[in-house]
Length: 134
Image (cartoon, rainbow, N blue to C red):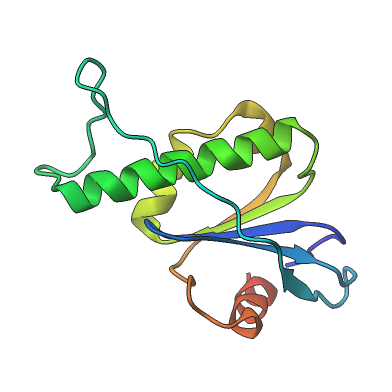
């Protein structure tokens, strides 16, 4: 995959969001960690409860879904504010499905690629290898 200079890579699971920025060029990416962003998890209110796609969601799954919704909202805000103009999302498969439900059309416009893989907690080098192979 060719990753433009300044592109943001968001690596997400149901509990953690890591954002990386490409400081390399299109021939050779060089990702570096960005400051940790605070994600406001969204909780379902009793009147408009979010229904998970799982048959019997437990509290843990509901919390992960809320985190994914909050992460999507954070990314949406950054795209709308102009802080992100090129984005790649790498997320655990179930988390990616939940994220997609919350994408703003502006985020979709700057989204370069999605990878359904859980890479949170992996070294930056592993993430770069995954992106290079995509």
